[in-house]
Image (cartoon, rainbow, N blue to C red; front, side, top):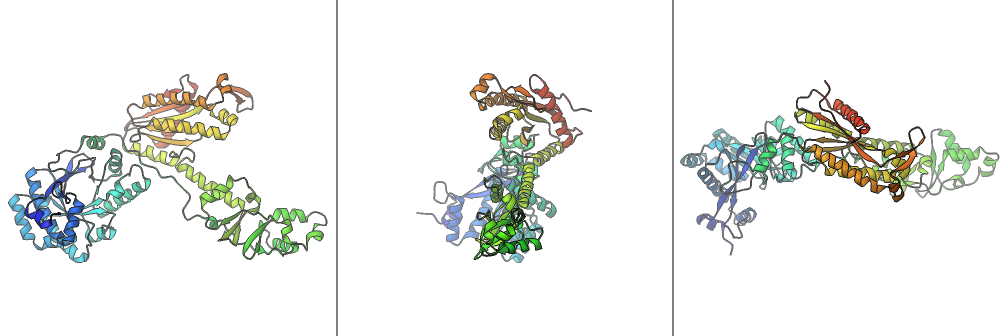
Length: 583
């Protein structure tokens, strides 16, 4: 039989646990959140079951008030440092404000300063009417209580409530925080909240942190406080310090590696953006009619042949005019159907086709779109044409832009994220090593074996270099072609790098044919067209150490790393490290 809430209170079966809230700039403790737990071993032990039962018994506010008193009493006895965060619904807050004198008297008996209390408005209950809630919160603030919005980003805890109540703290819900080290979208969401908090003079608390990686990303974004299992779990008698793992992460001199967004084609882009309005002709139209239309529209590249609203062909201007220029063709074909000179299998795309779908046309076997263009339809009904030139240009522009953010082959960060991370390292005064990795004899291999096998060689390099990085500290980018850049913060960077070089050299051989393996390499043309023997593809690395306080920018580091790489390629060991930056 399930206990009632009244029984739990009367028999003192409930207890409070406390979870630390850490300061990310120092590793110290801001305070603790009090959490209520039901009778051990009962159906009400979990908070969700306990408060669910209170709702069913219609005694939620009574349970909240009891939990508040129980938590303050237990917290005072433990003599834990910092502030005490207490959870209350809007209804409970209004009642607390209405009996301020009783609250003060209770705190005085415990000799617990009211200034140490932070009231968290829970997101589950409806806060309306806001005006009376705002009045209650103002009254409590005047008494010395601080105020926080809990679980921001879910339920009733939203931006409107933030603006209306002007809290001292905002706790970002774990659904936003969790996995921020892996999600560029979550990263940007927290960055924007951080900017809003600065303008609103609010301190953010990142909730639900469970990994060192997420913790360090929140620290480096600039989030002031954090809470979660990685810092400390709820406990009746919690530690007065954060977990050692969290302390080490907070105080680490290295900066976190932010997740990078892959720059994709705009979601709003579709084939309709390429469409031009072009007059069409029915199948029974004569070739002379087509000639008249082309004469009146000198910039027209093609004309669609449409029957009952559906395209059945396309007439290419150049092909048509070239045919008509032949002797007697006008007299022979002028009065015949325009289908005589049409392509009756045109390339047809829906106007809603995405950039990704359009890009597939560029690698398709049917390349007639280059001259004929595309026929664009809306649910099968003709609406216009697009030129092959516009298609190629648009897809190319998007691919070039995307490659600056992420390499389309290896999916590693491209030049823009690389530059951004270098700037973060410099601004943070971090000690790091810029390592430029290049593949020797890659071009001859690519020429002889083809781009497909060449891509396999590049993916092999990317995989092995990725394995040589600590994802928490080290940043791997793909500059382009066979050039990679690692920004190492790991102390054992050289061991990692040399092991990666050896592993790549050993595995690259397996991409050659048995005959070429036996020969020790391949015969290929050099840059001047002369035959030359090339050994197996190998990895060369040039390294530039960048110490804290170095007066250097990202462009200069990239230039020096490229120069170090060139020296490495000329050396016997394929490795070169600058001892110091040039003056």
